[in-house]
Length: 245
Image 1 (spheres, rainbow, N blue to C red):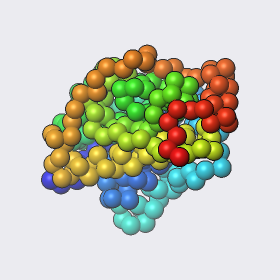
Image 2: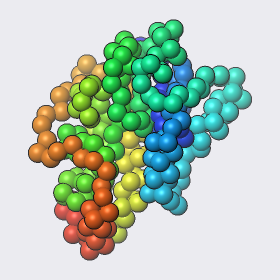
Image 3: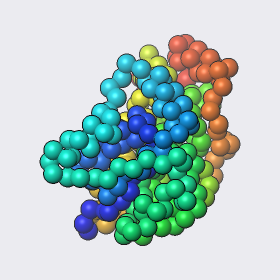
């Protein structure tokens, strides 16, 4: 199959989306359009995550990556909206015959956007599904002794509940910090999205697609400070249950 024609949605300059774009471009998966949400939520989430992975190798900005493409004669439209909802986004997608929409770190999105592309909307989540849905997956994984990893899945009207394509554990070694785990799941999420697009190109999705099943845990919200303190202590004392060494 040819490479998919897809739109890429992300919160403005979020490191999660920047890494995902870097991974996709490494295999020449070039979006037909990039739609960034420029909002207070986007600013808050970007700064929070940059702090969480401070000192790590953050991928080049979206603008820098697009500039590199421009130098090769490849022009990708990049638009900004106030919020990723159908009213704001669909005018930019409606004239494009898209195979897919790819989420690279967004708020919860529902409605027409999910129904528009021919072959669905896919997202990479920095947690293992179905065990760890929602926010702050590395923190809740340590807190509840859930294995740590990332998953690529289809998006439906739930939160991280759509059919699975890929999931892979991060090997957690003694001495790794919470920041290490946030970074490792971020990179792995980008790698899995790249691999999912490679599988699409090879017409392998029908054999890969599978239901998630149920989780014994609720859908998590952002981890409050008291939860993070327990996480830091477990990693410091190396009492997390899933070390590989």
